[in-house]
Image (cartoon, rainbow, N blue to C red; front, side, top):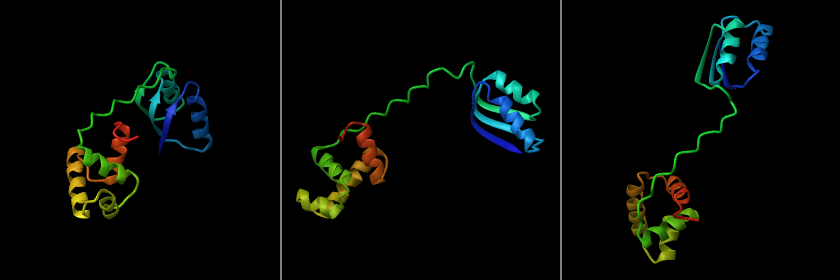
Length: 137
């Protein structure tokens, strides 16, 4: 049996071993994202066949790592920004065209150019990247 536990904090290994024993689980391997070495030792001493941790940490009280910075976004023309703002409001190509005095085909062309610059053709992803990158507020 394989048991997956997100994180084994200090003092969690003994209750886990006891729970596995109560359930009659014998050949058990524990997979966890994070665990301190002493907790892994308790698991193995308690009869668990194997314990694999993505990272062993001396203490689970250290601060989490900061998320990586967002990559810089490409520069957009004023018209491309106008189209992107209206896409973010949920408008269709036809409605965007009506509001900006363009044909739906021209709007589609602007979106294709924006998509190439951003590296994605997904409208929702374009909008999300724009908000995260500070192009839209």
